[in-house]
Image (cartoon, rainbow, N blue to C red; front, side, top):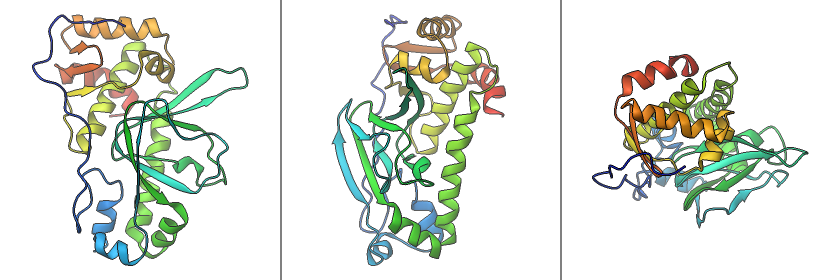
Length: 253
C-alpha cells in the first residue's frame, strides 16, 4: 500500500529498543524482571544460580530464529525489533500466528513438546535474550513468582490467539490490532500513539483473516475519518476513543 497521507511526521517514531540495564538492574523490557525482583532477586542473584541470559543477534529481516520441528531447548524474549510466528499448511499456504514485540516471549507454545510447533522469523533487525528452558524451569520451581509469570505469559499468548476467532467486522479487527499494538508497546515504556508497523500489509491481512485490499481500504477510511495518520509504515493514533470503541468487542474491554 502506498502513502496514505501527504503530511510527514514531525519526527521519526522512536526505535523500540531496550537498554541493557546494569550490573543489578534488568533491561527495560525484560519479560521476567518484575517476577524476579518480586522474589528479591537481582541480576547478581541470578548470576549465582547460573541462569544468565544469552544475548542473541542482531538477526536481520528474513532470518529464522527457529523453524517448525526444530528441537525445543529455549524460550527467547524479544529485546529489539519484531518477530513473526507462522505455520505453513500442507498446500504451502502461510498462516500468521502473531507478531512479537520487545519484552514479549517466543517459544512458549513448545513447552508441552520436544520440538517447536511453528516458525519464528525476524521482520526487521531483531535482538533476543535467550533463556535455557531447563534452567529457567528449575529456577521457577523454587520461585513461585517466576512460575506465576511463566503461566501469565502462556495465558496471554492463548488469549491473543483466541481474540480473532469471532465474527468481527474488518473495522473492528483492524482497530483491535492497532489498539492492541499500542497497549503492548505502552506496557514496555514505548509511545502508545506513534509507532511503526514493521510487518507487511499482507502479513497483517493474513493475521486478521482479511484480504490485503481490505486492510488497505480500512486503513485509508480510518485515516480519512481523522482517527489515525499513516505514512508508509509509520502510524499515529489521533483519536483513541473511537478506535477503542471499535476494538472493545474484540479485545473484550
